[in-house]
Length: 177
Ligand code: ADP
Ligand code: MG
Image 1 (spheres, rainbow, N blue to C red):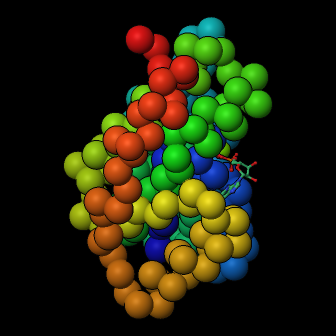
Image 2 (image 1 turned 45 degrees about the horizontal axis):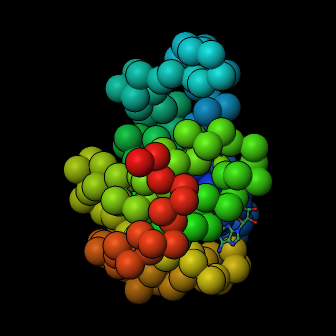
């Protein structure tokens, strides 16, 4: 089974994916590292530009019928049995990315993406089985428990959970207006 963990940068994908992989005994795959290993994509300045179709074809060849957790903001483009979209209040995203040393423009871009559900919408377009998890105010362990609980209950679709429109005033300073 392939489980994709996706979401806006800073939302907690890597932290949660590693916990989940360990708990389930699945292989953990960071998509960026995998692409670099395979010689896929092209460096454009600091950023690795990836052709998602090419990436998905390679990924399918290498991981079909294996048990993997794939971690990336592009993970929902991989052939997955389940897509987990992690969400967090845009202010948390802003603070984490600032801490990470992202430029003001990069922070703004990602805060806006979280605000308007960009990755959730992409995921729903790509896959039938999408579950959304609001991580705001939760520990990584609590998020892990929520994922395991959905799994136990066989929930394969749960979307429309968050609405950050009330967050707008809080995050105004971060937006690229
Ligand atoms: P991403 O891979 O999505 O960019 P990371 O997992 O690298 O995100 O970073 C998320 C940061 O947020 C980590 O420092 C992590 O400890 C912290 N964090 C706080 N609460 C949570 C949570 N509930 N789930 C995941 N990460 C959390
Ligand atoms: Mg990460």
